[in-house]
Image (cartoon, rainbow, N blue to C red):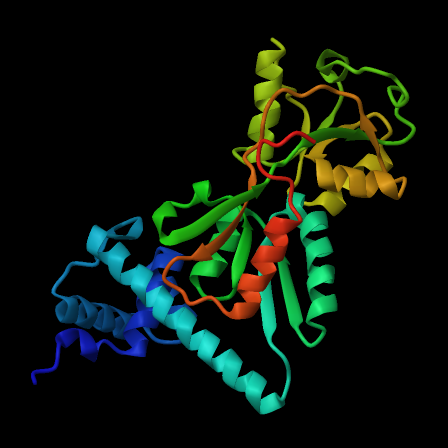
Length: 311
């Protein structure tokens, strides 16, 4: 039987294609996989010849995947993720250790996720757990690379959302927090107009929580504050709140209640009408899921407030 040209695609080809997609540059991709640019260029040419497809558009601004390239890269990442999974399982067997669960989560879901992790570890005490906190976009990149088993975030930020299995499982409620010494703490009702001239600590532009806050100001007929402190870190937000009794911040309800419980911040009684996208548990559609991951996802969903349910 004649061997398909696709069978001649090597691990070197797959690693290169994945690295080009991640870096947007053939030169940086070559550096990532530890080869020279001429060899990387030759390997890319070989991959295009073997697949019979043009995989990238080349320009002065870098390289961009064609539709055929996106298809090949998506499958290359799946193959590489499966090889990584195989290596981890074999290493676990050699070391005589238990399984490892790798979870990615956005900041707002951290208190809820860690609660479920503790519950899971009581049931499976020999499991090792790695938790990575970042933005949804970065977590999905790590999921694509096989560095995570599942992500708690939002798949809408992906350019290829169809490659994921997604279950919305928990509404995100947004709350305004302030220093415990803030003059508005203790009021029965605080309007957004009362906070319009204060310094806001906010997520960076285009992040879902930031967009929700901008929408709140539009609905109230108020200009969005122009003097901001921008950060993606809850710890940085709390440190800033501690240092300035007049600043305020928007946080997810779970995170706000966590810090308020330790007396680090107070939740102001501001009525917000914007609804944030619910948290989703996201996995790769083409990737086999270990039983331990399936069990954790079941526990995650069972412990959640269903999207759009009353609280």
